[in-house]
Image 1 (cartoon, each protein chain N blue to C red):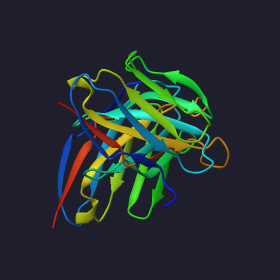
Image 2: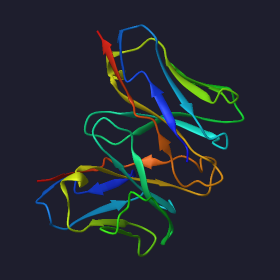
Image 3: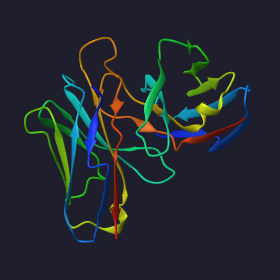
Length: 116
Length: 113
């Protein structure tokens, strides 16, 4: 399978704990995006990387959130001191700046987070 | 920023009938409009997209139309099948930025056999 993969698929944690999610984009895709999706809503943009550079962050990304893409391949999203309001599906997507479908973002299966 | 509105929120059709989902956007600079299908517990899957230099695009039973003047675009599914049942999301973005999609709130389509 050469699609976008995310790990873990599900995470249950207690309020105040830190969690980290991983995303592996499609091979050779240089752009990587994180979105958050709450129940009954469309995904909301959080941040995006081109190679290892984080080029934009949404105001939804509070200082408890940090994302990295150290070698321009996989990315991690960490949430510190989790709150119940962080419960959501965290989606990763990737795209390529070359080729005919540069705009197309391919999504992974998501990580569903539940904060108790 | 961009605001995308999607209607209806739920749609129930009989197998074989057509389904239409409509979206409007606010930013006239938006020029790329993908549609995604999301099944329960899965990530969104691209089903069709359209760029602003095209008014209509078709792929088998799925078609998308775009009216730039009115700033709205629609998804048309013909000859619906039970496996079309899912949540459908429209999105808008600015191609030159390539950086983020603005999604609608989704339409839950139920195709009754």
